[in-house]
Image 1: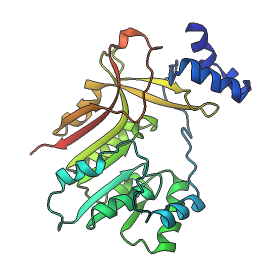
Image 2: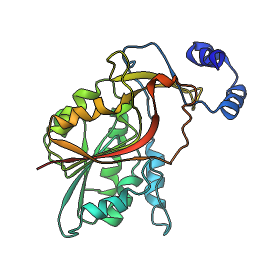
Image 3: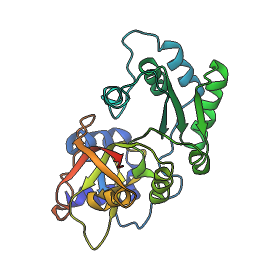
Length: 268
């Protein structure tokens, strides 16, 4: 395990044939490797949606049984429990929105939802083009934190995204300042024991080699404190089963490490 961790930590993986990387993935199924970094690199986790892909998603969406891939398959059911009055307008911010089919699926179930989209610059540009071509006037594409903060939201959705954001506290405090009713994190890794007063650790994501990303694991109570001081409280934390993430290569000093969904609500 120590040798394999060392291989994954190094840049040697850039020179290993893809078929061998696939064999390593199949045999050991490691997802993340702890590394000695103090902050995430610039241009971390680039995404790659295209106009053509989004066009196909729209034109094939009317298939009766179509359900988009998401890190939270029960999101619509959760929203139906929260948004009981179907005649009311709801502002939904999809932070790290990715593909357009998430919007389409939400609109199929919530006619009065007002959808706000934020992602990386390239993705924002593509979704803006799609909005214009298909006259999707109920999508608002946001290009900065300042634009995000000009609105209030009933529900903010962060699907497997905040762990890749370098200045995550700045972003989270900005989102809190919009006075949302709910903030929802999915596919997020938390550990239970704080070590050397560190609220987070940085890991290298290796399950999708040769692409390499870096992300945070958060100590759970420290993460919650960001919200508690602003009068938010957790409603639930449950295991996320969209992937079976393997943490067996991590030191036991962190205690239990879990792949979770977390719903937070503003208190009165």
